Image 1 (cartoon, helix red, strand yellow):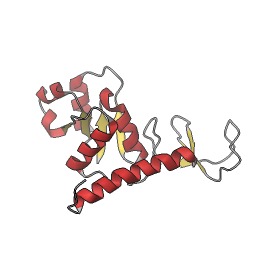
Image 2: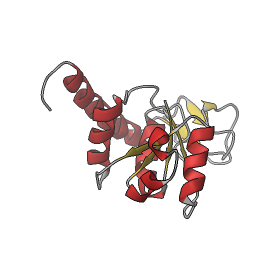
Image 3: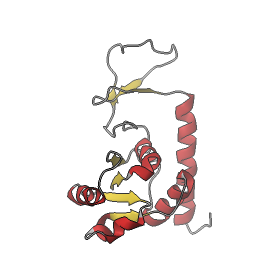
Image 4: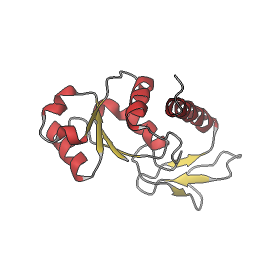
Length: 158
């Protein structure tokens, strides 16, 4: 599943990327018709909270309208509707630009923390990633979201 998030759902796009999903974003102010066209052309689902998008021809084929006002409620709604795997491929995509990460080879432009054993780099924007306390906190959040998904799919209530 590939996604396109409008400017209202940048945070959700970032978390989908962190989970390993292909989640693109258009620049702020992109016309609604352009969002619909891009989603259709790239075979993406357009995630939005903007109800007016549904008035555009072809929108119902590609738009997933979310009602949530925060990340947690959007995650629950998206999971309920699309059965998202929040542990798809954690930390395999750049959270800034959506590019798949590669193992970093050679010395970066800055000094590594002394306890870093492995790092990854985005070859498009140059961002480096490595395991740290922030990654552990993010992974716990993804695991919690996956538990919601798993409890829903096995018939349990959330």
